[in-house]
Image 1 (cartoon, rainbow, N blue to C red):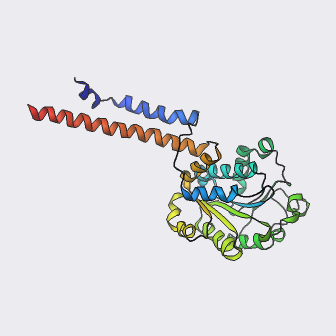
Image 2: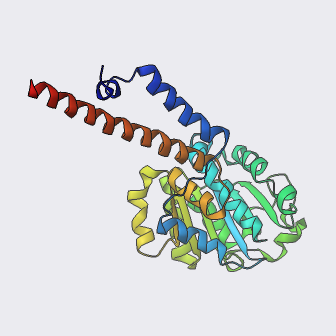
Image 3: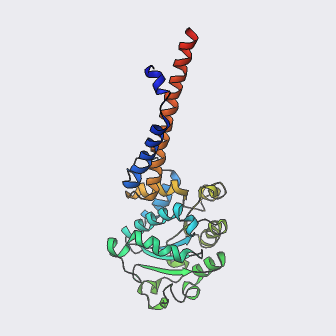
Length: 278
C-alpha cells in the first residue's frame, strides 16, 4: 500500500484516540491559546476596568444550574476582575437558583484568600429578590427597602459597605448574566432607560440575535456572547478557566478534523488520478 493510500485509510481507533487526547490536554492544563476577542467583550471588560477603587458594581446572578456551564465561568472572570480592582460589589439574584450558584462562584473566586476582600465591607450578597423587573426597579429605587436583610439574615444597615449604597445614584455599573429573556431586557429598561446607568449584559448565545440591537444602540455598554464571551473575558484578565478550556478543546479537535479532511482529499484525488491513468 502506497503512502498516499495509507493516509486515506487511517484506522478509526487512531483518529478517535487523538480526539480524546486533544480533549484531555486542555482539561488537565488550560493551554490559553490566543483567541480573537470581540469588540462587545472588550467593551464589557472596559466598563469594569475603567472604574476606580471603591466604585460600586451591582451584579445580578440571573441563571441557575442549567446555565452554569456557560455563564458560571463568565461570572467567575468578571468578579475576579472586580475584586482585583478593589471595587465594591453588590450581588443579587433574579433567578431562584442564584442562591445555590453564589457559593459555587465564590468557592472559585476566593475573594478573601486571593484579594483580601471582606464580606460586608467589600462585597454583599442580597440573595434572591422575586419579581424580575419589579425587583430591579425596587433595588435601584431604594435598595435598603427592597432588601432590608442580606441573604444570610444580616440587617443591611449593619453592613459597613452599604451605608452609602442606597440606590441607583450610588451604583457605577450594573452587570448581569442570565438565561432569561425577561431578565436580559429588564436590566436595559430599568438600569439604562430609567437611570442611564452603564449597563453590561451576558447570556446564552441563542439570545444574542435578540439582544445585540440593544448593544448596537448603546443601551448596553458591553455584552458577553455565551461561552465564547466567557473565554474572551478570561483571556483579557489573563486567567484561563473553564471557558478557555472549552475553546482550547474546540480549537484542537477542529484543527485535527480539518487536517483529516485535507489528508482525505489528498488521498482521494491522488488515488483517483492513478486509477484514471490505467
